[in-house]
Each structure stands twice: as C-alpha cells, then as structure tokens.
Length: 201
View (spheres, rainbow, N blue to C red):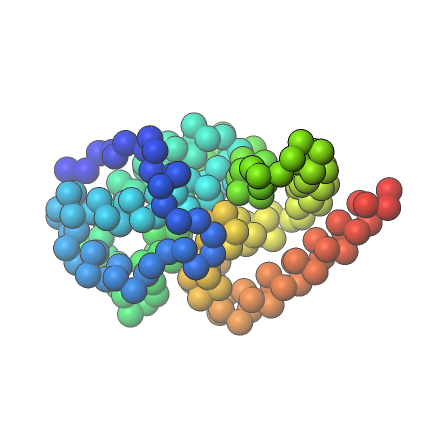
C-alpha cells in the first residue's frame, strides 16, 4: 500500500511553468498504476513539483505544503479507480484533491503566500543592482496580489504556481474554460492597474 514518497530533489528536476506538464500520456499511466504503487511513481514525479508550488502558495508553509502534497498523492493513488478520463484530465482531478485538502486545512494562513513561489520570478543572472530593483518590483507586485480576493488568488495559483491550463483549471473551480480565461484576463488587468497605482504612491 502506498504511504508516502520522498520529496527531496524532485521539485528542482521537473519542468516548470504553464504548459510544462504532459497530460497526453496520463491515461495509460493511470491505468497501469491502479493497485500498483510502483507504477504510480511516474505520475507522482510528474505532478509533485507543480503541486508543491501550488500548495506552498495556498498555505504559506513549505512544511505544510509537503504534508498536504503527500496526503493528496496517497489519496489520489487510493482512489485511482474512480478517475474517469471522459470527465476531465487527470491533472484537473488530482489538483481538485489538493485544492480540497488545502481548503480544509484549518492551520493555513488566510492570504495566499506568493513569496513562497518567488524563486521562479527572479533571474539569478542579474547583477546586484538589477537584482535589487527586480526584488523591489516583485515586492510591490506581491503586495498587489495579496490584496486580491481569495478566489482570484487561487485562480492565479492554479495557473502560475501549478502551471495548469485554462481547460485543466475549469473543472477544478467549476467553470468552463472560456470563463476561466476571461476571469484570468480580468484579474491580470486588475493587477496591472493596481501595480501602476502602487508605483506612483
């Protein structure tokens, strides 16, 4: 029976950003993994990094994110036979489990902690002066995001921390892909507007 997998090193090894996942082969992997913990490993390795980033953003705690990621993976493996490919992608099904666990976690801080996924926003090749300016811009941006409502923050976390596409996000949040796309566009426009206001203060 699957109890846990080691988390060390996996997050750095996998591709990041929207579109980095490869859902096309998930169905075959799911079929092979039903009742076989070893066969679940490719799915675990594929989705561990984006799930850690997403849950880190949701909880603000790397330790709690790791705990919830393990719980989500174990729950997913134990319920693989209930997944139906004709009802949506495996990534949507898997992240719905993670999202529900995060929502039920009473220890989580209220705001989405975007600073926990900030490493992906910074360029390590920048010189110290440019890095300081980039860090200042990032701090202003995070301040703007922190003032968004929870729904908008969660949508951003699913898109940019987890790297899910709009069609993958849609069944998780109970909307159609076009509605998700429009809400993301409106949210990004709001961020740009508020970010501009932040600059002139």
